[in-house]
Image (cartoon, rainbow, N blue to C red; front, side, top):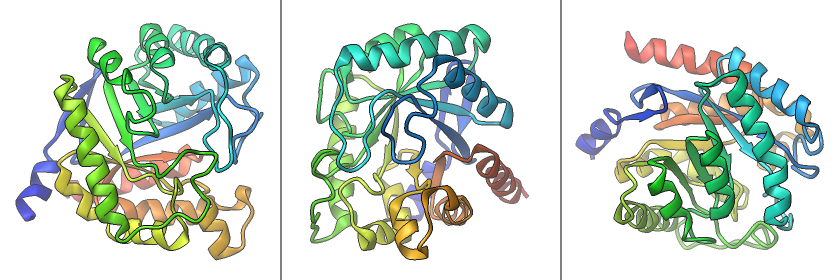
Length: 285
């Protein structure tokens, strides 16, 4: 087990012009171009506001900007491919025009959107289904020599929070991510990141167990991404509205880093960058 942990911390991926050394921690800033996301729905539907916010997050130190045009909050319904493309592709093009070396991720489960985004300059596909919803996405990622984030989900966004059950949540997540990482590898994808999918078909206790046992997923030997930002279980525990969950989120981010996470997906880039800088300084000492 110790050897596996050490191997994970020596992984390096070249993404665009940057080398990501996963001994260290990185920040993924969230840009939702949607009317109905749980935290910032509607805030960045305007293209200029979306682009300006992406540039702001980059200037604050975000290593990756994750751009989504379809809400995946509990109870959400899919949007058409046309609508998703109309929301995200012009924003990607404008960001790349302003910051040619920006590392952009497309948050989608659809191969067509992934293809359009990668063709426009995105370098990462962040698939909340881990390639289950549209398996053609693996071929698209391979053809662009892109990076893929494989997340675990139980069910789909519309139904996933209707009494999810597990015999062992970590074992099921591990098996799912192992299976999908094998599929990705068989397609020739070399840069794979895994995400346990906090809040995607999990209740409060499941989420807490995932955080507590996150280090077990390092045995898959892929960098671990985690998205804890402003999630409902934080509000349920602390009785806080969405806009007041950033401090608690950052505390959990710190714990997740200590448990093996290496990419923090967040709404509050400024706090996450400070946390990662401190973490990286300590492990370099």
